[in-house]
Image (cartoon, rainbow, N blue to C red; front, side, top):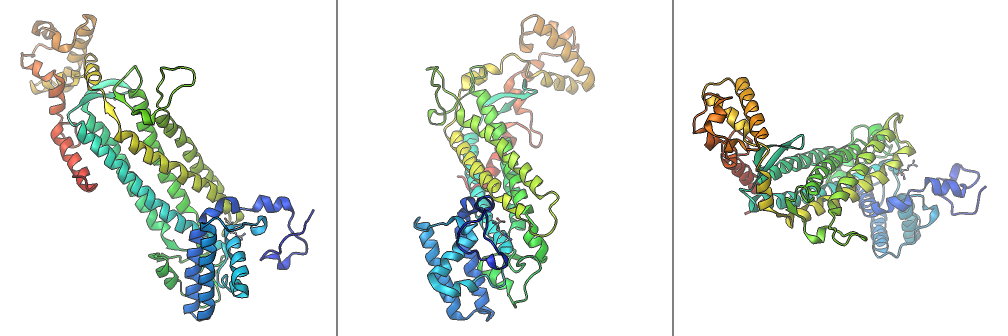
Length: 464
Ligand code: ARG
């Protein structure tokens, strides 16, 4: 079934028009219209290059650039009328341009294909988004560093297997996330290098017969590099995958922190208070204050990871060079951007307003034999081999536990049944404070070490 419709730019070789269903099925306009600014910037640079090379006249270039500026204003103001037959943003812009300036508009696509055009648009778009995300991550790291500074000195139980293990500084715990976010920024900066390459000049797949000057186009669009294989330039979406992978790791890191915030705000832990503005209530249980923001961040990590998988599967098995499958890169990419940015920004907000419940945290340090490793270390300083010390402390812990006591509450005589070399100086080693103070190894939780790292982070982030 065919119908009356506008003639398409590629209509020449077709005898009958497109089925309405096919038109709907193949159209990307409803999502790629968000690329219009980048599409127009790319077209302006392309037209200027064609002018510089004498492929278009100066008057033609001026008309095209002016016309494109008008199209952009129309879309900016919401006055632009998209038509179902437009198929994608590239054709919508060109159709309107030609309507505005006449046949000269039909010269814009000289020495270009939508294949290299779309590759350019996505790169330009993603370059902007990566910058936004880098900034958002810096803001998040600042919020984390400020919180680490505010509560410097607070000790909480460190966990392994979610069992209380050894005491650590809260700031040390928080700065672990700073390490992750710093690597996240490094991955984005690294991805940016490969993303920041001009694909124009590849045209459909094989390059062009026109005497183009891609270096000039690259200069206009601030690309430090130019594609050097036309087939790859139009077929490559590695940069989208790399971004989605970097975004997935960001989401995984945010999700791990979200999980901790959720646990810590439960009555079972009760270590923190998440500000009211970042929680929601229950429609049936009046007493509830739920950590929904943190839960949604944890939940949204799933869709970003899903998009990464989807993109990889879309690319797998695609023959060179361009295939229409590649149009399927945009919705996942846009959704990744739309998901990860608010998650980073909201995590920063939650941290900015987070309160620690210091008494409850201090209470959690009692019991659990958090300084058992310190007692073993003490025995080692008295010449006991570590494995022997470990066994002696294990027996002491078992004894203390069955008598309902902490290690520090045992008498010297009780301890000596298991660890005969113990003197009264052991008791200094059994305090939480001592345990933290002594972990001065590089990257350790001792306040001197954590203070050094925090100062370095603050300096890196330009914090006072
Ligand atoms: N909408 C297309 C995409 O997103 C643009 C390129 C179309 N190229 C083509 N030969 N049909 O990939």
